[in-house]
Image (cartoon, rainbow, N blue to C red):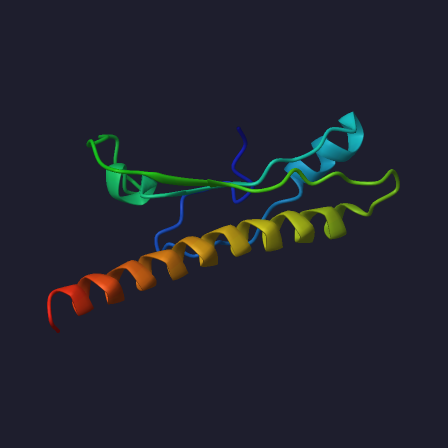
Length: 107
C-alpha cells in the first residue's frame, strides 16, 4: 500500500498527490486499486507517535489500468479523482445516516 499524498491529512480532505505511484504503475504496467480509509486521523493524529483504537471505514474502488504511454500527470490525476469520489461517497453516506438518525430521534 502506498499513500500518494506522502503525508497524513490534518483536515480529512485529500492533499495534492505526488507522482511516485503513477510512475511505478506505468513503469511496472500494473493496475492501481484506489483505497480510501476514513478514521486513520483519529487513531493516529499527525505528529503523534501513539496509536489509539478506533473505527476505520474502508472503501475500495475499481482498479485503474493505464494504457502504455499515459502521461504521468494524467495518471496521477485519474488516481486523485478516483480517491476523491470514494471520499465524497463515504461523506454522503455519513450525512445520509446522520439525517436518518436525526429523523428517527424526532428532530
